[in-house]
Length: 344
Image 1 (tube, rainbow, N blue to C red):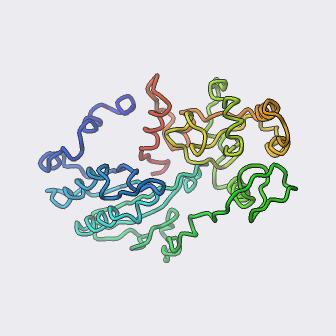
Image 2: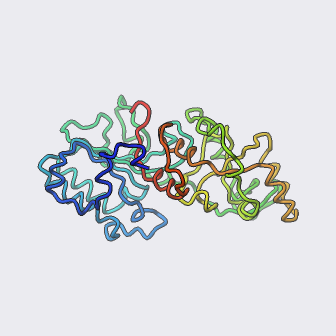
Image 3: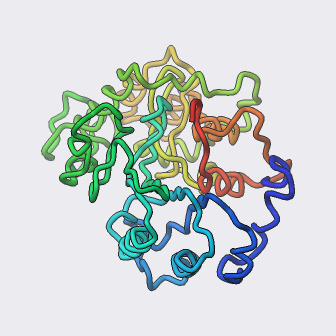
């Protein structure tokens, strides 16, 4: 996909193993910027968190070893990774290395919603520049949670001071289809496998006018039959689906398994906007499997297309995918990319 969307001369080095490039070869490149998105698996919260001991970190550690020995340091560095990288030993080594090289830097934890894009995908970012003058919004030792206002005299107020700023309160869910039913948990469940607090959070997200509606990112002419959820999946995962409408201002993070797996891989789109999802879910009690499927099919739930996901990840309209590429391959490219935004 890179060779289709970019000139080949910009892609030649992508076929090389990073830690196989010698110091002399790096010096000959004489680059002025490093853009990095190292493998995230060593730092994910649900993984083994191998950090520096994970072999997949080796290429990044090699870059950190090479950096101070370059004849000419790059002027800028941009790095992206998952939440969790900011508390890793690898991050500490990065900060130590660029600090010794004379870089000014700032760290962030940001989501596309910060840019008005209706998708939640919290990621770690670091920007660094080889200048003695610090960033006007620089907050040393702090990880900023939003794009800074350069006129602010106190950027620290936007920084992380506790996990409660980014972690939702965890409440054990219970299943109830009827809001009048008394559940034994701490909060009643309205119509799905989620708490009233979670539903309130989604309503707040949909009320945030600084974020655009999903309809702005959808394709106009597609064969929806290719993307509808199959009846068996509807029945099995009905209580686990994150359902959004074209008028929604939110969607969950899309993973590379989206389209192949259902649970936890991304939101699905309700295409019949006049059907109330609450009414459908509350009516499922005591129905047979066939009747439940009939009810759920009324929502006409479908997967987002690869193009729509690319739109939500900030890819430009002219970006094209390789004909015949698998959904998982397209997802890997989309989720491993750093993209400029309008006005950047």
